Length: 225
Image (cartoon, rainbow, N blue to C red; front, side, top):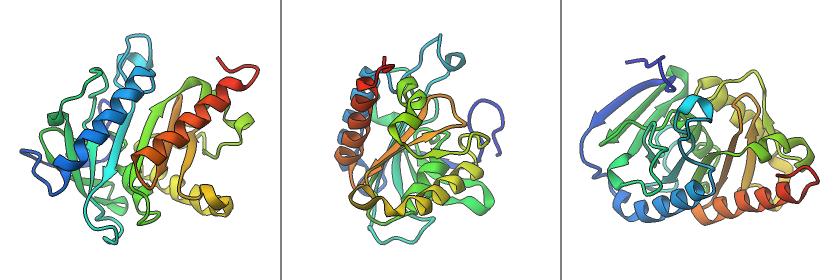
């Protein structure tokens, strides 16, 4: 079923059931801990005055063998529209088992359907077998100060959760590959997605640290607030 209403813009080929994918139980505590911290910082959440009251932000972590083929690198991700609770229960996570940019499709298993940004997460994991975690948050200060901070940006005419966004992320990675030591701990801004920011790294700690460092840099600017 292609879901065009709400926020999901890909074909969600979801198999409902328990979260029994190999490695999911071990990965869930750290994923939920980072999500809780980001929620406390208002980088993830659901507030009536923001984005029409819809939930915002999602996080994921890689599962399975590091050298799995692109398009089939499974990851544990928060479910669609699960932004409201500070403490997200495990049954609000699911595993994306496969994703197909060419067919605009995401295959998943678990108690809930995956986040609307699951296709973008998959595209990021396909950039390198060394990428182990992706954080998608909403930060007005980072989004507004992207140029001053020198943060890479996806095109302003590319919408979130689409094949175009996934491909834009891959093109942007090619364009910034010369970034040196930061090549696998990056923070980007989604110019066409209000306040949208993506961070990733080899694991949750590296991705989270990169995001928080950029947030501190934004607050240090004259207009940071």
